[in-house]
Image (tube, rainbow, N blue to C red; front, top):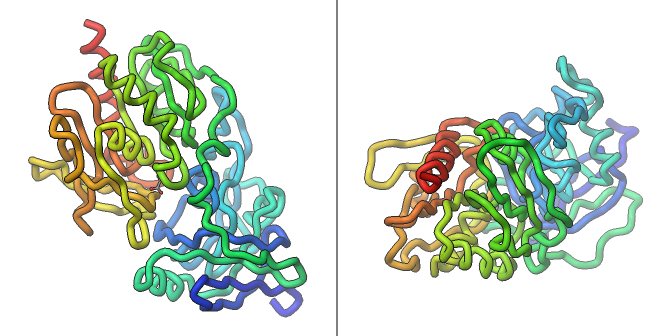
Length: 362
Ligand SMILES: NC(=O)CC[C@H](N)C(=O)O
C-alpha cells in the first residue's frame, strides 16, 4: 500500500484514525454512523436515508463482490436502491481491490470515484464503533492526503436533506389495480418494487406535494434522511390524509412523520440502529421479527394521541418500532419491511397494507 494516498478520519472530539484513500480524492465533513450488516453495500450506499453521513462498516472485508450491473427495470435500477450513491464518505477495514461476482461490472473504488465519494480503508472500524457507542454519534471529516480540508464539522441534520433527495416531479410506476401515492422523502426503490409486485400503480410525489388532491386508494410514506422535524410540509399533508381516512403505511422516516402527525414527539438516539439483525416484538403477542434498519431518530410513543398505540418495540433497547391507529387503517414501522439488504421477515406488512386497501374499497 506504500504507493497509495493516505487518508484520515477525524471525529469532532479530536480522535484520529489513519488509513489509505480509495474512491474519490476529496475531503468531506459529515455525520459518522456505523452499520453492522455483513453484506449489502450497493444497497446501503444508494439508500437516500444515508444522505450527509460518513458510513463506517464494521464487517471487516468490503468490496469483494464488486458493484452490480446498472440495468434498468420498470424505470428503476434493478440492483440498487436509488440512482446514485448518497453516503458522503465511506470508512472500512479491509478493501478488496479484487472483486468477483457473476453480476459485478466494476470495483467499489471506481464506483465511489465516479460518484465523487471518498473512502478510507485500513482502519479498525470496530474500534471506531466502540467509541461512537460509548460517546454517542459524532460529526467527523474524511481527509484525503493532498486535498483541501473542510474548515468546519458540518451537521447535515440542520439541512432539509429530504428536499434535496426527493423527486422533483410526480412519476408513475406499474399498472396495477391499487392506486398508491408514495410520498417520496428519499424512498428506496424496493418500496416501489414491493408495491408493484402487489398489483399497485405507484404515484411517486415530492415530499411537500399536496397528494390529498389526487384520486388514490392508499398512501405510502417513505424512508428518508435527516431529522423528521424538518418535514413540516409533509406532516401537514399527512394530517389531511388522516382526516380523509384512506389506508396509510409509513416506513422509517414515514413512521416518524405519521407519529408526529399523530401528536408524538421524536428524539435522537445515542447512536442509531443500522444493521440487518434488529429484533422487534409485535406488541401484545409473542411474535418477534428480525429486521433491517437504518435510523438515528426514534418516536416517543408515550406522547402519542390516545387513539394510537405502539405496534412494534425493539427487543434490544425497548425503543419504538412502529405505531398503529386503534380503529383506522393507519400503521407504520421504524424498520424496513422492504429490506434490501437484509431479512425479509416483515414483508407481510405490505400484504397487510393491500388488505386494508381492499377492505376500504368494499
Ligand atoms: N431510513 C430512514 O428513513 C431514516 C429516518 C431518519 N432520517 C432517521 O435517521 O431516523
